[in-house]
Amino acid sequence: MSSARQKPDTGQLRFEWLEPTPAKAEPPPEQPRTQATEPIKAEAAPALKVPPLPSEYSYGPGHPWHYYREGDNAPPIPFDDIPASEESGRAIKCELPKPKAKRIIAIRERLVSERCELDDARLRYQEIIERGAAALSRYDREIAYGGNDEMARAGTLALLFNQVAGRKGRIAFLEGGHSGSASRAR
Image (cartoon, rainbow, N blue to C red; front, side):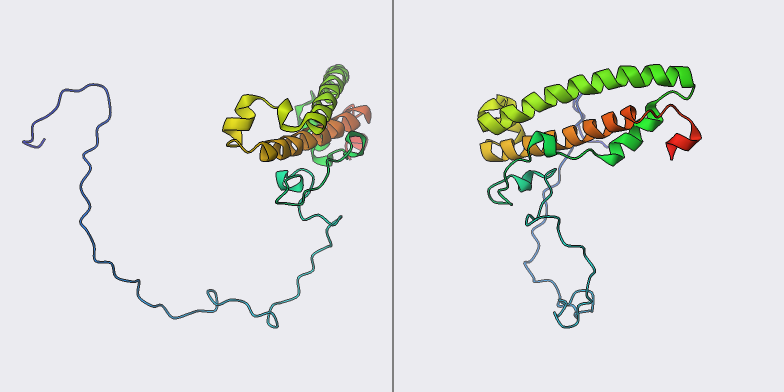
């Protein structure tokens, strides 16, 4: 222990900050440019084989900038045109019980639940399309999106798009009759 006077313990962490010593403002030393730091010249860049975007938009409909004015400024996808997510269907497979009887019961219960939640998502999606940021909570508008109502609307549309695609994927998987047999799991 140091000989410095100790303060009584109040249950809070205390830090003794040291004043930084002012350093001379010297520019960083010039480093030789390497191949990694040099910009790639257009004629030297290898040709990338990137598939074309599925539409004229840069961002997919699951991204807020797809709907944002400073992004793609795209209109919302109609609810019935939102595709089912294949990943969410495969992911639910792990959550289902292995015994066939329990699996069938779980599939039926989950289907009812997913369909109800899909109907709720449909209503919410339509409400956001029709009313915009006015349909959002104060928290969403002021805190989550920093007062940017346009971004709050875009972010909510992207979130709902992803939720709907996931629910449609799970419903498609469950309706496919995946009772657990090895031949159907493929």
